[in-house]
Image 1 (tube, rainbow, N blue to C red):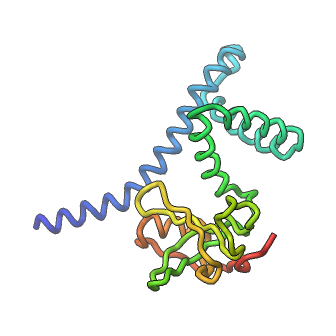
Image 2: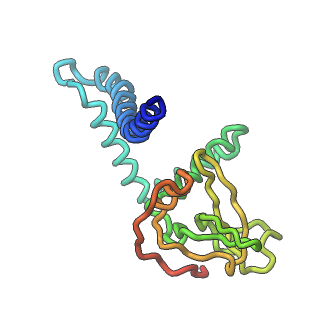
Image 3: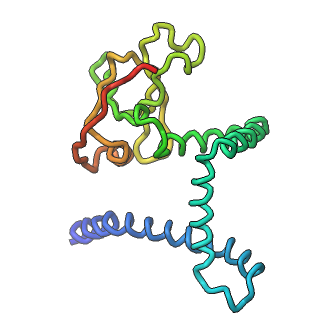
Length: 207
């Protein structure tokens, strides 16, 4: 009887936790945006013109506007100059660069060549799912890619944020028929979730 109850409680948790976490993140974003920008709007606008929810709408509009500005060459150069200041600041540069590189990896404007899901085969026959991050030898540290025929692959870990970045020969890498979202979900859950096949791009292109 106890095993029966425990099994169904566990099944219920697995079912409801993803929903609750998703709703909590949405709630956190709405509340945080409303608190920050709502106070600013109340300070600028007359009390009669402000109504709840304007802070969230202002936050979404601000993010959208920043996205538009980042397509302007002058704004891109100014942003790069500001980033250089962060890169020269102790402690901040390490944290900022790591966070920016992580999110830049999933950017929709990123070259599709770097979004390829692959299986890395080791000498003992073991295969690991990873993501191609660099294929151009010139962009790798000097001395790291002496043969000129290797690629850099990120191997995410299951059930945690983190992973390994390895340099492997191209012959040891095989493209998988999975999208990035499917592969990340499959890897982070240790293969508990499945995936739906999608068409994959050509393996690698030299730049």
